[in-house]
Image 1: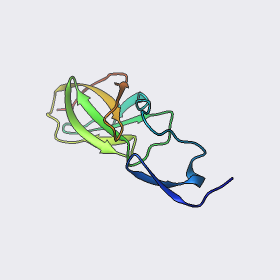
Image 2 (image 1 turned 90 degrees about the vertical axis):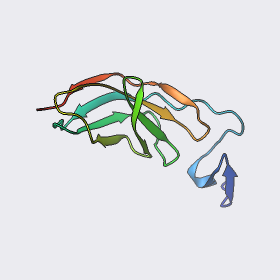
Image 3 (image 1 turned 45 degrees about the horizontal axis):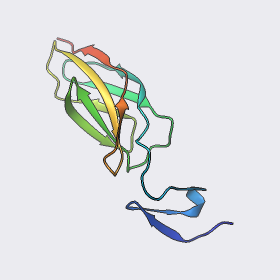
Image 4 (image 1 turned 135 degrees about the vertical axis):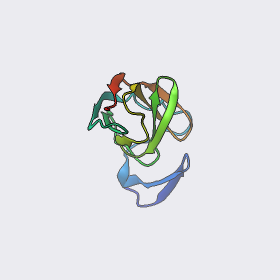
Length: 117
């Protein structure tokens, strides 16, 4: 049976055509970002990309960490440019997903970069 009605679940609307099933109540934490890769490293920026095993929506937030400090958060995407880095500095970067309920994933793999001169 296909319903064309909109339903409000956990602060988000969707039609029944978008999902065959859903859970009301506690949901599982978001999946752990994996295969974190850094590229296009300059003296003040780096591009990061990662994968997940689910479709990413605007309700998915990814926090990017240098060691234990969040340096950037992005919504609904699996890549980001990190600006404002210091030249000739080493960063230990990881990513962690967060859903609208505040549930946290495990951290991604760590990527160590050093910005250019």
